[in-house]
Length: 99
Length: 88
Length: 95
Image 1 (cartoon, each protein chain N blue to C red):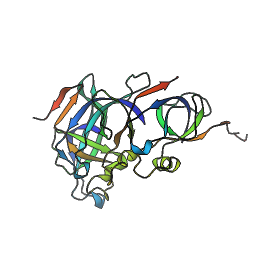
Image 2: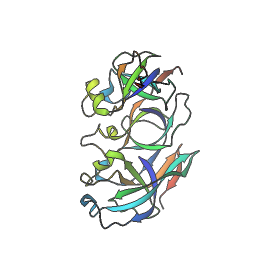
Image 3: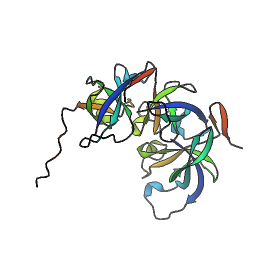
Image 4: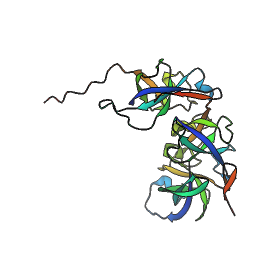
């Protein structure tokens, strides 16, 4: 999975029926390097059922595993938010803590 | 599978119902000279890997297999590495 | 599938139950014609007895791995050595 920051939302009226009621958000992947949480190079659109807000750090599952998330079986998605991150520790030190 | 070192963990109380309480670890993939390759990723821990452990992880839909019903995960720590013999 | 050369092996005591008795080999993907490395070394399961230096064929499908290793559907293994390669000849262009 990837750590990602929510940077925007996507609104679409014409969409696959499986997308109905599912929020679409734009997330920017983040990686850990030298004990720091830094932006990566990947930006993807993901489905979100957990209510992630802009600026939140989330955990995103990609690929066919994404459809294993609850309610996503019939959704034509390849990226789903599976958790809202409270805290990230690296080498025993906190690198992110939700306020 | 790739080899990686467990360099941290992620705590999340708000989880998708299917994810369960499983521990989520931060992995730094390594080559067989133990130099970093690829970006860090988050995986669900199947084997009780401690911080600093050398592990093997699997990516993709197969990472969801060990659980019934399968978890919505795309990476899973599947083995603790005791040692390896590499002759490049 | 891709061709690779076995570069080593890996030992593990604590591992997913489906991997008991299965050897874990370090495989370096190689271009079958040029013979040059093509990507990062990875870890593949082996039941054919591939040794270090052996040219092998590696499948990256979990279902193939389950069949070959006689594992159930709960196995997370994806990479498996499916053949020991004798020779990879360049295709004749027919010119």
